[in-house]
Length: 380
Ligand SMILES: Cc1cc2nc3c(=O)[nH]c(=O)nc-3n(C[C@H](O)[C@H](O)[C@H](O)COP(=O)(O)OP(=O)(O)OC[C@H]3O[C@@H](n4cnc5c(N)ncnc54)[C@H](O)[C@@H]3O)c2cc1C
Image (cartoon, rainbow, N blue to C red; front, side):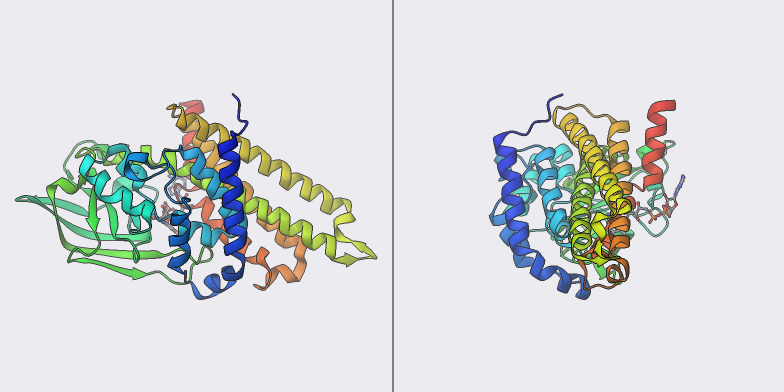
């Protein structure tokens, strides 16, 4: 396998890094403290072509692979995870539309996402259905030529900002197979009966919008079904096999930022008459952080490259997801430790990185679920 990057990929990285370093640092602390985000920044990122690069050219995208989206994610997260998430999650669910949507759905949604005219999200999780997605109880019932949707969703990214939400619904609750009971339905959020409430007080990625949704007799036409009726579970797994790669890239970006902060601080800070960076304990910690980050990067490069080649290796993707997430949490922890008491206050970026890191082990499959997949791929 040759993971050397093409000139185009190197240019993407350079442009993403320049944009993020130019735009994010001044705003990061304010967005984090106030749990806000300036949508103009998202629009600017769209104008510059950073959003939805994996979307096909015929729908306004750049027609790149998921790998290129990962490269942008890594650079954005290396500067600020919260802003990176706020901008790049705006297409969350377009992967499903691209893979399984009808031509009409693609033409309706995808160009708006790339142009900065619409945000989308995907709501699977419910109050009583987290890791066990098959427990999702939101129902979609056919009435005439419409679906009628009822239920509630938890932790929906972009739930308050989205123009479209993909809702994971039970369409065949009596099916003997729990993997054949659900379907995805595209819901324009202006539809009567859709209501969202912002979830405040998140530990990290506070620039990113998270919502609780209530769906009360939401009616959409039957052709808003995305993919095949009853195939929602399998479609969700195919979706995760793409989106989990994005999380790996986020983790590597965050770990890079943690290393950078650790180096900066330990070179400046003197104790016992010498910079902290000169003590062997510190040097070894930084060596370990750099090694783990590189290992995670190689894992996700291999996994993303395979997906773009059309080869889906569930075990490899799950390995990359849990390893990179755990690695990022550890790097952020070590970086904060090297800051001593200064790392404990939010004047210092490392505190934000420490808080932002934790989500990587939770969303898009908890690390326990990822290890379950890895062990299944090895042991059967
Ligand atoms: C900021 C944020 C954004 C999110 N965005 C979205 C989104 O856009 N769309 C969406 O649908 N969801 C989203 N989520 C939800 C996220 O995917 C879930 O939180 C996650 O899947 C875990 O579900 P849960 O929180 O209900 O935890 P639970 O399922 O209750 O799990 C709690 C703990 O038990 C462990 N556990 C559960 N089952 C097992 C088992 N069989 N074996 C071992 N351990 C187990 C878990 O690993 C975890 O550690 C988001 C969450 C957050 C916090």
